Picture 1 (tube, rainbow, N blue to C red):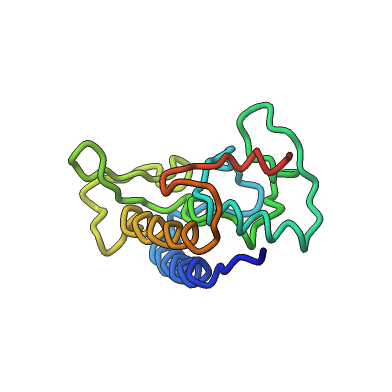
Picture 2 (tube, rainbow, N blue to C red):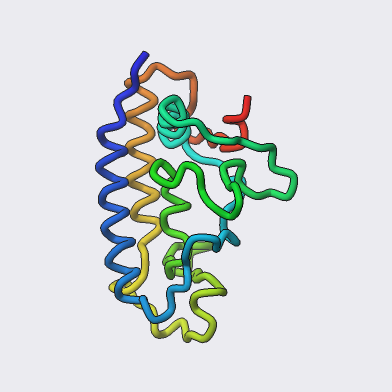
Length: 165
């Protein structure tokens, strides 16, 4: 059964534009480049992202390996083999992320990119609103599950490493 990823692809385009804008804004701090893979871990993702990656794999041969150290199974020679179809969490790494944790706003930033910074420097305008995009992704995932007939709940997370099977 072919799946409809239109809503997900629109969200990816929106995320990519936000990432591009923030990367430009923080270009003096951003050291992310090919070969930097500290953040490339074996994440769990919502079914819509999992199935989108699975679908993309049908059109592209990748050398998948079993993760022994918690790194992503798609990381080969410090390079992402599914870069074009990587999940949202991977698209936002390196940026200053703003999110709610235990009823308070928290900031997360890559220790390699932002070596010296004061939390006060970061505001809504110059951080990635992670909760906003996670909420959008959650709603897209909910509709995807309803329409696809897949046997997942709205809260299921699937390990990317299970794509090996």
